[in-house]
Amino acid sequence: MTFRGTASGLAYPFDITQREHEYWVQALNQQDLDRHLCVATSSLFKWMQAARMELAWLQAGYKNLSYIEPQLPRRLLVASQGIKMIRPAALSEALHKSVLTRVSIGKVGKTSMEFRYEIFFDGDKVADGCTVMIFATGRSGSFTPTPVPDDLRALAVDGLNASPAELSRSVSDQMPQVPQALLNSPANSGNSQSLQHVYRTRAFVRFSDEDLNKHANHSAQARFFEDAQEELAADAGAPDELRRLAAGHIEAIAITYMAEAHALDELEIFLAPSAAAHSLDVWVHRMRPDRRLLAKGRICLSELPAATTTTSRL
Image 1 (cartoon, rainbow, N blue to C red):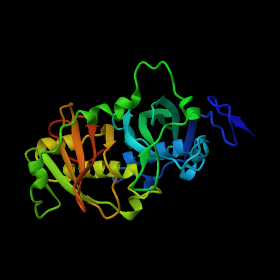
Image 2: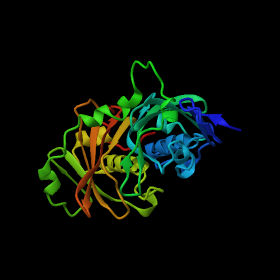
Image 3: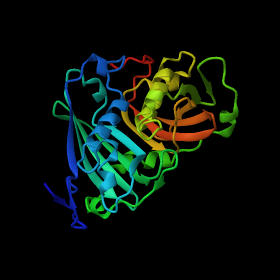
Image 4: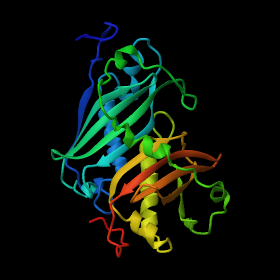
């Protein structure tokens, strides 16, 4: 069957006009959940990725994307993304439920495209999401932005009053930088430290974190965020105020990606109380082999009673 591009009229063997798709995951079991029997936000980001990669004009390895006129090797790189839960504790409600992730095309820029998502557990909507992606060409490690093909630009939604990209863009763009003095301070003998109301912990990028682009998949950063939050909540030496904040349910998470991470990179993750209520600002810095800010973002959390310092989510 032949499909015609809306803008060019050119023929393609795949549906170049598809702007929505649904991705299903069978009923989740214990092995799909974390130690609190909750879905990790990194899983939601992976389902969002799976949904968009099944669009007919993408497919595994971006095979079809590279055939769209004008033909050239193309990739999509995540610039920023976010998830907003419909209600607190929704991530703890997934056991034995099937998952549907619906993706659709939002706004389209010169080199960027916005993907929007709705996530359902057994038909009940639990989250909205958004990913802003950059069209790029070149080899791994030297990607450069490239224009969105006209036939894909034609998929953009018009006449929107507000963009869900606020989930993934605005909060982290307004975040302050981690103080340089803290970056340069020596790490203590433990796994983490608290200094000037900033909590620090470490992580390493694994080979299994890398994807076909030969850099850490975007979902790895969500794991670094969430693991750092969990460590803070469990650290008896951390300030009670920070621990109580970190113990709340995730209501939203937003990440902006600044640079690539690779296997064996040594990272330090910094968390600090945000200017936004009941939120933690998060920065992921590469310390070795070269120092650089890799990602920044925000975790919005439900408020717990003042006496609560447990990490239990159930």
